[in-house]
Length: 72
Image 1 (cartoon, rainbow, N blue to C red):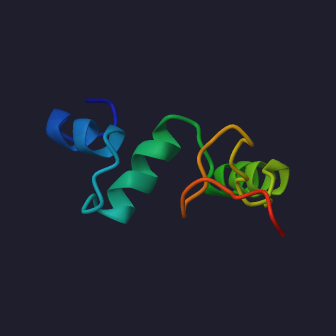
Image 2: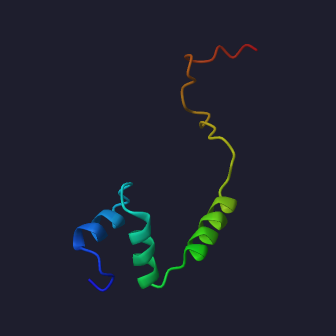
Image 3: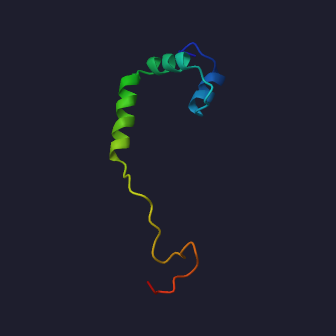
């Protein structure tokens, strides 16, 4: 491998395995031309573009406590 890591490490890294070593992961990113600063900026931009409104069920869905009586 060009990065100096084994195939198993790359497979685990691509799969998002939580036990991948950070230093080796950053080395692979560097070999690929990725800078951690750019990745973090991208993550921040994605978070800023997502809506923070709660999911509201459609009106045709059944209410969690059974059908409404229509009386308030």
